[in-house]
Length: 476
Image (cartoon, rainbow, N blue to C red):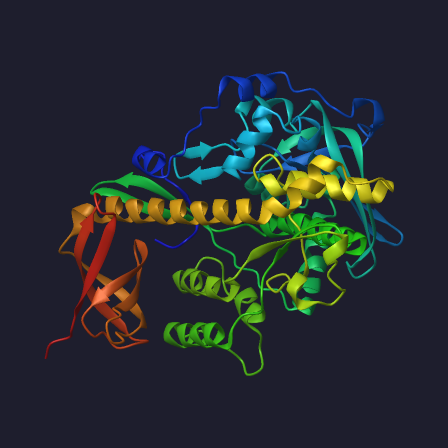
């Protein structure tokens, strides 16, 4: 199974929770602070409940960090983006602050999540729920006629979401020509920002959600390709993060997400995968352009997107203050996948660093000093987030490995059609893409690279979470 969003509510992932010490439980003091959370900046907020915000999230989501409204003006588009103001709900230095620094982020498993904050806060008082007045960091970003950010600001505000939408429903409304009025310009915005991303040389790795469902023999996977609305909505977050990075870099204090340029070896490896899959790579085309042109519902696209994650290796966090102010244009502050400096600020209910970066931006824009609790935490955040991201990646891999073994355990000995993405090299096994169910796995033997072959499932062990195939050569 590919590294993608995965839902498998019929499986038990408790063993993985135990292995990685993931627990939903919070101690009594942290729980008390979450339940009793009150807006620490209630007296200084502006009231923007007049803006008819909407949220766009997967069905069933309750930890709603973001609400959006886009309006069209004579000069271009104006994006209003409300982000849950978690910094106003968590007492600096308190028990909840301490516990969230230990966790780093919300962990998502195929059968549910392990939250960064108690659900009483992340799905209650801090969540931008429909019809509820909430405290938020309100971003206002003005775009020019080609979708480039011309001006931006952020302030503390009271907001109210008027509708809780999901991607499929929004896509259906757009396709029917009847989008919600608050996001009637979302498609135009998305197209403009996608074009801007191509100009920047951004790399968009789009992976669908996979759901594991029962069938007559056991289990099978069903793909749910990402809608255009997913991409448009993601562009709102990316735009905001780029503006936040600019604010902090100009002020000389903050934390940004960094990524070095892709190595020539990783680009060559992706080109080899494209050749093996029969995907055209025009001369001079960038990896981002090739990926952007792929159909969303083909197994070959999933293989390309998964292999393309190799272009994005080396992601990190850089915290800085006025004594170590990066100069404009310094490659160390760039995020090569986005093609610009970028910061995480749009998911504070689910990711620790966003709370502190948002606090820096609010202070800088207001012409105030960054609060000591935020400034003092900045040097520690890269280490915390690196550890948390590493743990999340390992949890994801373990969940996918376990799911693969579950889906295939009743099919050991069966033959499957596959494409050989990489031949055997020394002690390294060949790698094949099986299209049904979609599995990217190791294969014993010497299958020819780039060829369509038959492989036999040799092992599917749920205890060790391993799956392996054998090459079945064609016989005369």
